Image (cartoon, rainbow, N blue to C red; front, side, top):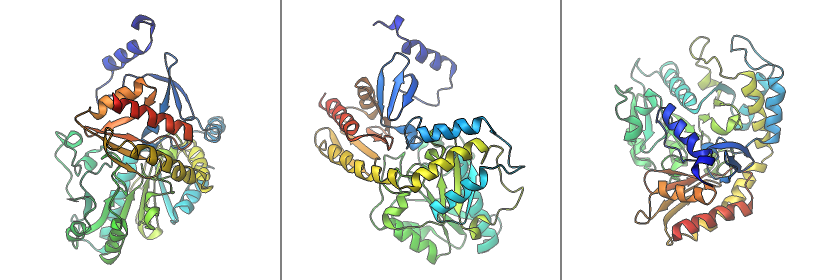
Length: 404
């Protein structure tokens, strides 16, 4: 086939012409999907090894989730929080129970969940801890990715995300990720929270040293500081447990959730915490028109029920070991390092071979979609419905790319 009878080149050109260039997507134009597979406008199939940055943990168009969305579309889609709808309480209760917390505050996007967590922590600091007005600070980690609002990029250490978006919001102290001594030293009488990703996803699936998260939990308890875990990418089954914190038996004061919570159908995020934390909010102090809407709750409660069975956490743990074995076999054969936790992997390619972007382009040519980050690193995060054979297909495709 030549370009003039393929639909992809024209669709890519149109997207480039009419879209602000805040992303640099691969030249693949998807038209349909099922499970772990995507099909483009020219009929070519691809194995999805990104899963919408973990928003598609249950695969594309999971039947139970699609059925819930269809049923809700026929009844009620939006009321605003001015009223209560019949899906709201079930979602909040079941998610709270999954998290082991008293209360849930639903929002829409991951960044909104993070912003909510920041606001709640500050208010808790003033009203409960007794921090002087306007003095609250939050300790965060280098290499963090919590979203792209103006407040969040104020404490980003990624200059692409941060540069030229000032003036920046004060009230944050940045310390090295994984350095417990530095974190403890940064906490003072005005510190209200420590905000961390249990595993840093955008940074390249960086897993902290063993004992770090329990240490953070202990320091926060001793110093009367909230531990906020951003589990937006790492949570809800991705790492082989319900939450990445579970691997070390750590329970934060606040979970920030999103991505997979919407089942790959609608944007849903949430903050889960106990009443002594979330209870500081009163009517009119925080909200969202679409947060906790009927369609979102109908889908998200089914997501929670899928997780409550434990099936997807087990799949992620078991298949993650197969993924780990395959990837570790490529270290020294084009890979210089591999980090795997469940079905989530960061791979550092020898920069002398190729960039991460080039590797992803070559993988796409072999029918596997992945995403690069920070130069020569690529990330793999396939849907949790992927099979052993499909994992082997992805690893073999990567081996071919690395072999040239």
